[in-house]
Image 1 (tube, one colour):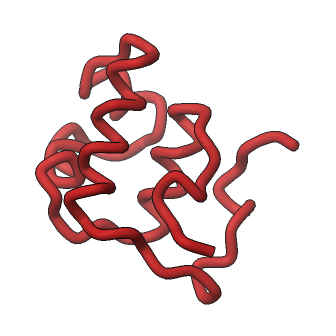
Image 2 (cartoon, rainbow, N blue to C red):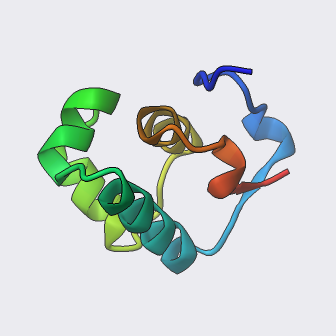
Length: 81
């Protein structure tokens, strides 16, 4: 199955704690050697939005799906389904 932004129904999911999301995003980004700018370009979010997500700010589920697709990780990395 390929990862797309539509692979998860956000109405049936709740997010994991923001601090865990931040750590998971940062870890996945660094694991593939992406800078914040690389991730921003790949997923279409601004660098500021990526910084906010990695700082533990509240992240919109749609943004998290885009980040997951760009980092080639399952959306469940950031959601409890």
